[in-house]
Length: 375
Image (cartoon, helix red, strand yellow):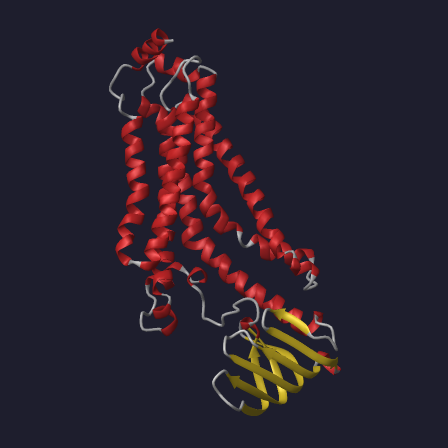
């Protein structure tokens, strides 16, 4: 890059990092407040709170990075044009391609960064979050819940124990599970203690019964046990009791998932949409950066209105992103919508590039003089 190109890249990159940091912090704060009950009702420390809530950052960055790039490109071009630097550089013979070079480097870097977030960091963070929430739930169930009280762990799930025994054992356990429509499960046990096997947390119940009452059954089914292990990941971290959700699976795992698996078969659309969204996410960085450059990449005099061009760019970017969300929803329902989801960002990028370089082979100084004449 030339000295002037490095100067442009520095301005745009600084604006991109600032926009990315501010937007991520604001949105993270709004999301983190939803999990504030980790500290209030579940008695966790500030460190645990920040650890768990920070795990949503990769998923936020994946969506915010193209928007931050769009804002940074508009900001830097508007600044350069407002200081008449674009007009002077165009009059000195700087071509649109030369002006685009620093932005191309930033756009490609943002796309690679967004790809790393979507293909690797985001699924990793969701998997870690699932395990962390399971740990919190285990801690909540065995240490925070008060003895003698009927505690609502979540809607439809009530837990009670009489007292705490030696070694942290829970005595006199009662649990009512009505989360599944049409079925009530009542767990009674003399004692229970938290245990861990591999990455899973369990509450091991000793000497008790399970009563299952189905909606259509006249009498409940009774199961007597000496020892019974309850998977605590079913209580909170994965309330539906399903295996790893699509977002919690690595990209290689999504590429080779078993279509015969019952859970995969029931959620095939979600698996398909999640896999393709990870590859599509970087394409929106390309499209957003190109749209912003197309709007303000041509030099204008201070008397020429840049507001209309910026408003048009915002409208196009908003329409493209809304269309992308719609295509993602269609992908989850129909496999035929997959090409459309890829087509939208690629088409937006190509159309913006054609508009940005429509005068690439004209004398840029002639356009400046034409603008002065119109003014």
